Length: 252
Ligand SMILES: Nc1ncnc2c1ncn2[C@@H]1O[C@H](COP(=O)(O)OP(=O)(O)OP(=O)(O)O)[C@@H](O)[C@H]1O
Ligand SMILES: [Mg+2]
Image 1 (cartoon, rainbow, N blue to C red):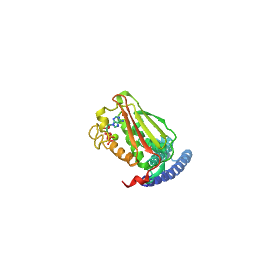
Image 2 (cartoon, helix red, strand yellow; image 1 turned 90 degrees about the vertical axis):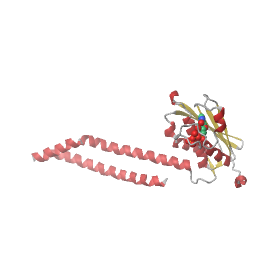
Image 3 (cartoon, rainbow, N blue to C red; image 1 turned 180 degrees about the horizontal axis):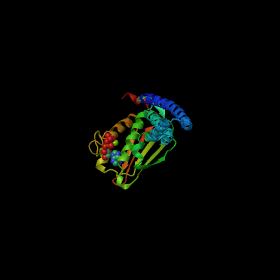
Image 4 (cartoon, protein in one colour; image 1 turned 90 degrees about the horizontal axis):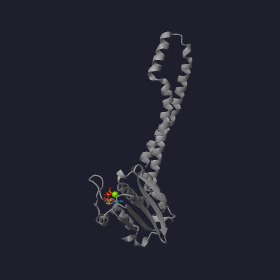
């Protein structure tokens, strides 16, 4: 992320300087403008007025600060996105750590929000979950696959769809559920979703790897994925993972 953070850093520090400079220049212009009446040479005065008119200085004086303000807002948004990406991909890809799955789900949702926001309303029902020993970045990958699949299952002709994210825990297990109001799956499709390269999406749209990768990540956690779906009734995927990682089994 620092490949992005560095340029964002100098752009925003330059922007601050630019803001100061332009404020000073606008002040100076205003002072000159006030002094215009003192110019006795007709030709000079006419030339200045022509220039002022062709540059539309009044507009520029208003628009320049607005442009800078908008640029600052844009930069702030880039900053926030980088922050979410950082959280989403977590410190180290392959490290087991105690993670807050609700927070992971939230930063994952932020990462794909642009794909979600025009197509679905998102309902959240987060339960209290103890920290889960997991490969947080990889579980986030699973959540992302499920959320993207959920969005892609919605029929745009039906208007806004609904995606419901629910979490909870039971005994030694935590679970995260992604439910959609989309087209659902036939028995045939449901049976094959975990097969690598199985996709019902048009060429160029899906590689058919999302669910098979998700399966192996969840398997690595000694967890499981429950699927509940029927054509026309949406789909519900629930990922179960043990709260405590069984390190003894890691040799496989
Ligand atoms: N929420 C869902 N609703 C309906 N069908 C689904 C849903 N999730 C998965 N599927 C079905 O399972 C198939 C496989 O899903 P998977 O995520 O593995 O691949 P993909 O989404 O087609 O492509 P990719 O994820 O690689 O972009 C999908 O093509 C789709 O037919
Ligand atoms: Mg997919």
